[in-house]
Amino acid sequence: MAHKGKNGSEEKVVFVGDSRVKKGNGFITPPDYTAYPGKSEAFIPNFLLKEWMVGVVVLVGILVLTISEPAPLGFPADAGATVIPIPDWYFLFLYQYLKLPYASGDYIVLGTLGVTGVAFGALLLAPFLDTGRERRFYRRPIASSLMFLSLVAIIYLTNTAWTEYQHEMAETGQIPEDVQREEKAAENRAKGLPTTSAVQAKDIAIVDKDDPAMALFKQATCVTCHAVDLKGGAGPSLRGVGDTHDKEAILTIIKEGQGQMPPMYETAMGAGLTEQDIDSLAGWLAKQKSEQ
Image (cartoon, rainbow, N blue to C red; front, top):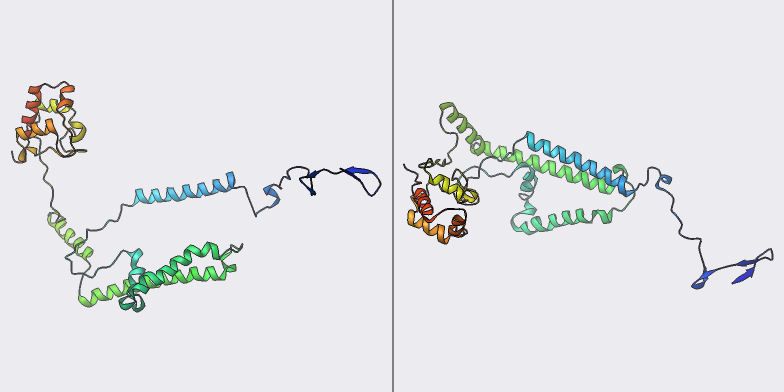
């Protein structure tokens, strides 16, 4: 449609759908991110590249620590020990917290579910409650105060737990179990004795290692599960198998299988072994005994 303008000339106006909406001049291109210096940037690739670089630095740091320091596994737990139990240092604050009057005894439900539920719930809701644009911690008093309060509480509870533990050990005259074991190991090492009380597995030797059946063992693909040295891998070790299985029992296992081991008779025959070869192989395995 057309109508007259202020100067009397006719102006053509095109409407879209509703006669009250004028047709625009097309998609309006928003200004580039450079129009907002220091306030915004493109997610791809700028922001994503920064996040990736930070992740790589953290990963490299973790790998360096993993390679340079062995895992501090400590000693295995001893249920019969008479020493006072204590968790690892990163759980000391929880250990001490659960000793408080309002978190133990008659209030154990409040301590384990109530207080911790509120704490973790507040942590989950923090992004939704603290929606301000300010990122400087001193301009965010509530969030910063809660963070510092949590850090102070964790440090205080950790220090209190360790201090009380040392006092308990001193009052009862006990020595920490790990210290006892280290002292005992050092004493045994000085005397040339074993430094551990763990039962050492006896290494069983292969009987008749030069027997031709050893070549048949490899040809029959038995090494796939039991390894060339008979110490096992995907399957059990065959060293000392003669202590529990005679020749007939081994032949039965080869032909019928056992447990998760499928029958291997057809596989051996397909690998080129004869009936006599399989019989010789079973006889050689029956000789594998721990005492020779």
